[in-house]
Image (tube, rainbow, N blue to C red):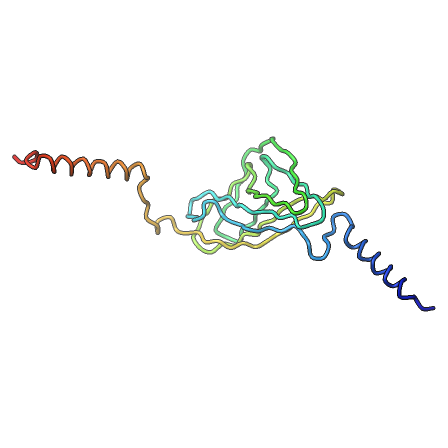
Length: 187
């Protein structure tokens, strides 16, 4: 028995419909993405406390849900040069969501954790974003991110802007006084 052309077309349309509209399953390569991953501070030195910022882009056909507040949906594991520590937890948690096509910048770690740069060198961070779909299925998306940690003694410290302004104003005052009365400092 042979299937007619119309029946083949209807079967194909049905398969495409099922593939596109299954809850929580991305269709045609659409997915939740991690983009624009950066460290804060941008230039990391040994001894710095590090935070990771990432933009979450919801290219899926469904709204995604994740935790916010003191709990970050970002978790980061480092291959070396960073110490992770946990502190007392925070209880201000709220649920956030991203509708299809929306994006948001998320910061990690949660307030109960801290990341401290311990040694200089290139460091790999595996950044993972945890979320749920409308059917409460837990999902994650991860991306590898590499950044450099500099030795704190290798970069000179510059004075703060207020010290620079103070020094310039003192020098300008001396120049003005010397210009008006060049005999002021003669003995």
